[in-house]
Image (cartoon, rainbow, N blue to C red; front, side, top):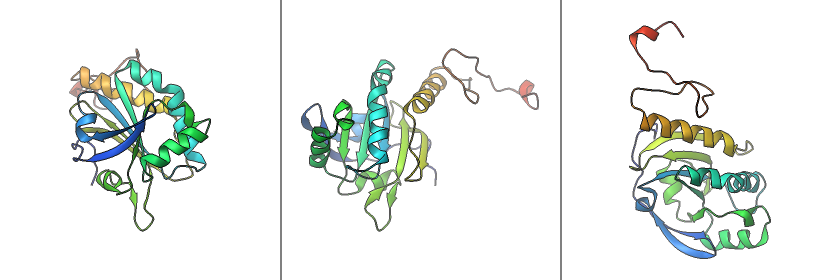
Length: 187
């Protein structure tokens, strides 16, 4: 079953952000756009490249009013240790959620059965807590923060402009479509 257009499930988890341990819940994510990025594990290989890419683009997400959350099945203590020892992870200013109970990975349907690790899942969540986009990739395939940023902008645009949709490769400021009978078979 697809999670698109479904509300996020209730959760509470410990996280690391800005040198502090904090609690994050489903209520924390509501009220503004959010991106939740699951990754397999701390202290690995592709994961730090993705999280660093998000860190390098975090200010752009913030300009849009979007909060970023990374999640793995490691603990918030592990996140802090990784943040303190890795130059790439040390750049992170967004919230790093620990999910050692697998509650979030299960809720978002990215838990690898029998492994206790999360797949590379990316979720765009609107301010009402409804999932607007889902992408899951294989472990060896890294994601691109700029492409994610483009998708977030499209989701925000569509939410703010009922009756319009964003075509393939749409970028902010480009022409959108207004679906109608007149367009059928003409695109």
